[in-house]
Length: 474
Image (cartoon, rainbow, N blue to C red; front, side):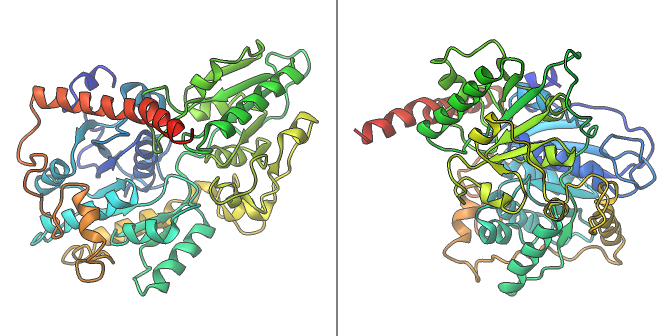
């Protein structure tokens, strides 16, 4: 994948395994959303062969053809980030919103997954509604969330309304999503319960024996924007290093999402790598990158503030701690784990505490491996309903109806135009004059300018903005 990325507009081609496989397009705006979108696409693909992919559903038939599109912006994944995610596509290219709409107007797909922030979903829904006017057939449009939904619930959901399926990662989320839609008088039939598509891996086998082949391993899953200030991030780093010193027989890992200069779903102004430069950590403390699933393969204790990695860990029955040191607050997102049995402080961890998750809470989050007696559906069948709904929609006589978002120029005239304008679209979904050209591919000079502009933006976020903020506090 890395070699093909040398030309951002190039396409990776892999021949289809059988004739007439389902065709799926995924549009993502960050590395984590690409991972969610691509894995979700494979799990919900209609008539997907069970053996076609590790993340495939339980249907039968040909493996899907997956075309990937990366929405150009501050968080467009780098080649390293894409390699770390480890999810390949049959083709992959970088686009603006108008360029993507042009591609959708001339190419037929069975399913389109919009793995974007809420505003991006809303803009593309209106743009797609316009480019598909008069068409008797169109793809089933699917969207959802990468992980825990702990902020801007109503805002994010209403911006996603209009997709044929709005995926909820758990029973709890499905109930909340329907309540929001019904509460504003919007159609809630699109809400479909699934699970996070990247759960899996071998169940936790227990602590390593003394003198065994590996040390007891503690992993702290860092988050780009939680917490969002130097003091709190330095505190967490200091406590992690202190834990390593207190337990020299353990391996203590700081799992990082991105390298300085890279962006992920959220902006990271204060990378832990830079904060760690002032420390003199013990030899059993290390910074690590890589696929989270591979890191979890050797984890005995997962620690985080509120990362979705906690759900991956719980799914595998790895002891998991959600920290309370900075409080249990909506701003941190750890309030989502109230009732989980996982809340604890570094003091308790240093003293040897091992949390026991609440089974009912875990089941409602859709992360209990294999389900539980309390009624959670087995993870292996979590995507069956979505797949069946997609198959039924594709078989509707006369094709699918036009997309029908809740927000329109009549219902939200003071909000919607700004949302669409950020993606160079007019209120009717058409490209704005003066925006990125939608009728031709970017030339070499434009590609160079785009890369330079993105680099300048990231430099400003990570270096200039923090300095200005500190000066303002003097």
